[in-house]
Length: 336
Image (tube, rainbow, N blue to C red):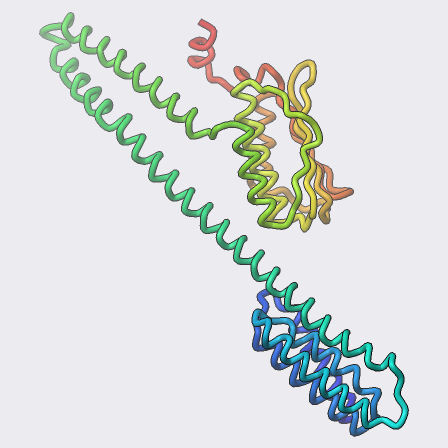
């Protein structure tokens, strides 16, 4: 009963050490010492068959960031195994192969541990860079809006007040002031539109570059199946937003190792297809995908999602989308 009780405890430590989401060196030492204890106890109770615990101990001590400690602990286990084998009246050369298992498992787990920590650090750095970029973008937008509209709106207010005062005694001057207010307002509207166009991003190519950085950080390979066609500016902006939202979902939820992207031109528009090899499923769509579906629907496009084999997203944008979502004054201005 003593052996079996301690064996259950050792298995729990072993599973917990390798199953922790955030690896911790201290559990490598706990697991290693537990394996030595299990070997000593098993050797006392059952004999040489307990030597396998030294192999498990080598595997556990390797699960940490210090290479010299990992290999040193594995070497101690190997020496203990050699010493025990030399005391046996009968042994074979095959028994010494376990020495290689001890050293190899320690080194392999050490390399895996460091790789895992490196990917975690890379992902954390990427999140911090995205946060800093978002903060900088918000500051830029606030600064630009202040520069664009602060002075202009002040002038509009002053001229509107002046026109109101002149309306009864000098209607012609009041009308001139109102026309000036209209001119200034149109100029401000053009400047705001130009600024908003800049905020929408630098196109699909730039969004692809950002997507590749995010996917690489998550260990997901991006495969572009065809040469990307030239897109009208309005459609390019929309498909870039679809790509951004899709990549965010793939990184956070899919568990995929590969994402395949296809963008093809059709007679009446363009279709973007994104297929990953992740877990798929029919989980409810979040705010991002719902918003994208509504945006495409308002433009006369479609958005489809299939979760049977991984997740497949298809977004179709018609060529008429450049004018489909405009309000009446904008549409008149665009066609005049």
